[in-house]
Image (cartoon, rainbow, N blue to C red; front, side, top):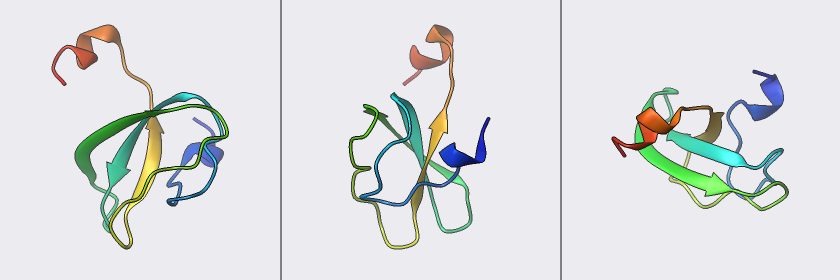
Length: 64
């Protein structure tokens, strides 16, 4: 996956439509997932937290 999808900060425009997971200050996923459209601003997150685009199958979504 391209680095343009790595660790997006809140308020930055989403580089692509997709599902994004929240990561804490250590880069560990928090379990929070969102769907964002291309160009929409990334939603708020705690200080130091970031968003990272994820790709998942329909099977993975059934557990969320």
